[in-house]
Image 1 (cartoon, rainbow, N blue to C red):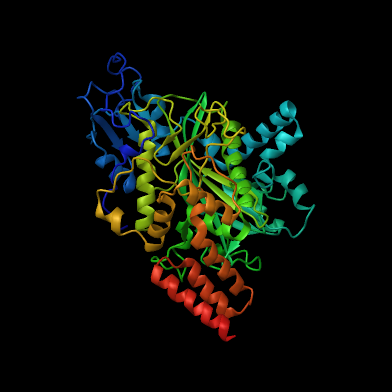
Image 2: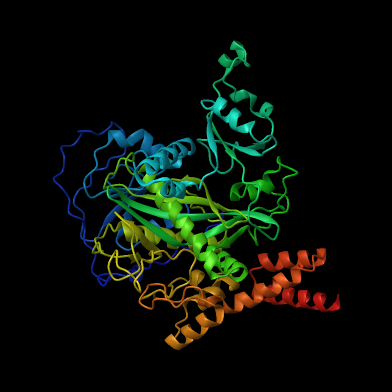
Length: 556
């Protein structure tokens, strides 16, 4: 894996007036006698008093996580047997050590004790089904219907007979099998015949010898979404980041950035065995024969939102992203009462969302350990900023007041109730409630200082740099009004932290509109050029390909 320079730090991006206050060490409780509640030979969680502004961390991962922790001002890496204040670990450490170490009040760990209630596929579905029934009893069917964002799902082998009943209602339907405890697309396959999942059969179809040979791995089987939204004929899903700092009360932050992961092959249901067609995991796609590491297989979520806005209009896209917000909140509420809420824990979740042709979002899974490795320079920049802002929210230095609604790229979307964009947490904007969510929107970053590292200033992809500049440019009230009326957008609340919203899509709208007009000709030449246009990240390549499309259009 290539090694990129460490990302700069953005303490000045905190929206609190106390952002520049000197750091302080959180108040420590009286130290417990050595040896009590601590496993022999395990990593210790008791921290002795540290010099002012010092935070000692341990990290079990490499890449952007370790880079950001090492470069954070006032933080130092703890040695092997040294006490620590902050731990970024994988879930395996949690299983082996959490119940055997004593943790001081001030320490922080990057996972909740039973995080698997949300991230393990079978537990996720079980909790969502239970929560839906609870909503139906307490609030009615209309409210319960807001939980219909996950495909029909069964756990195998325990629910094999229930699945067979559903399977026989619509023969020929495509289903997808996923192992509950694996990631990165491993073990996933599609099927249309019951004989393909014979190993999970619970009745007497298997002999005693077969049953005793090996224990069948637990899977979930889901109805495969056969009508995914396609761009350039290719399937994609979204990776969105949610940071939860407390479950009691529930406090959740939504990150503004994210990305769409594309498959490398055109979508078709004629070949259900081709993982390069149906699975969008980067770990799978980078092994495809025609995978180009320079182009990659990702779009920034801002680019996707611009694309959808240009094609479908602001109204439909706003509804789509509001439906995604509903997925985040309802899924967290479904496990709120079962997650062990420890104030020393936080969790950065990676949500995988699929959009179908009707612009309906579907929850595929939730990752408690989303991949933080970088597949490109652009990806490295995204991950570093995500991690820096996560540390800002966790606030080991004690800079925040607790009243912030935005910290870096994170927006507070739930604080024991929905959060509004207004001045107070639940305040109305222009007489109505407007959720404090800005996923995929460009906005000026108040107090943002220029990046201190040349890698982040100069070496980002030109297309991404240009669109980010469009989104962060300052507009006067008259300019905003003119652009809004030109594109049919509603008047925005200027006091909101996101003032520009979709007004930066002027050039992109005209650009994509022309592309769709050209694609209407349905010529293979157009399709080939259009694909290059969509996946190109260089401004010269964009201009060159667009010119070829125009010439081909007028010559035909």
